[in-house]
Image (cartoon, rainbow, N blue to C red; front, side, top):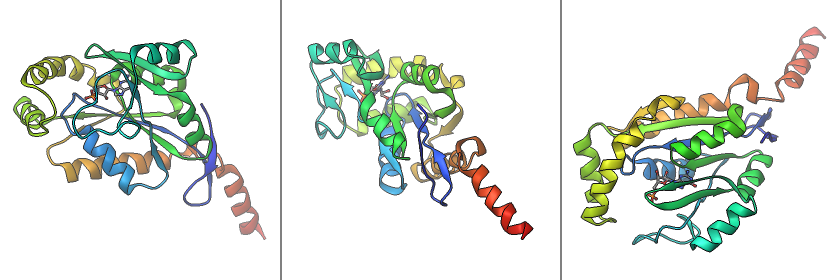
Length: 219
Ligand code: 5GP
């Protein structure tokens, strides 16, 4: 899963896999959209899912909405980098767009659950940077689920019940952001990405850069 491309300061670097997870309703989708709209060099991984489309969602933008047979065929062909059952539906990350983005030097953003994060980490530990988004309170999470008005009361109850289980995976993540305020949470997530992009081990062109710098200093 290693790939190299020109970094923003001209030094070649390896693309990274930036994972955001949270219980649904904690603001992860909003944060993902903000990142994609405002951060250069970052592509969103669009997952495939067997769940029905919600009002306002667009096929191919939010998810590739597929039937069970299509999903099973993708698993069979090993087209998915990871996949998992979430809320009785199957969700998975198509491999080809991720490989293409990383090999052109772009980072990839994933909005996936803890099961998918574990699988990515097993496959590419050094390239995965994971962030868990927590809501400030249960009441806040429930209010957000109602405000987005995409799900029935039954589904909201189910999502609240699942939240406790999802939150129990917080310690498997590299970073934790508490989303009290979306602007602050966005600033924090951006800072994480900026710092991770500067990590020495990812900047594969540094040896050449420093060698040239030393040559200049010595002459
Ligand atoms: P939702 O149905 O609310 O869009 O997503 C439900 C959960 O599935 C979210 O926690 C989301 O992060 C997760 N999810 C979305 N796509 C994927 C995927 O490709 N793989 C995995 N493992 N989880 C995903």
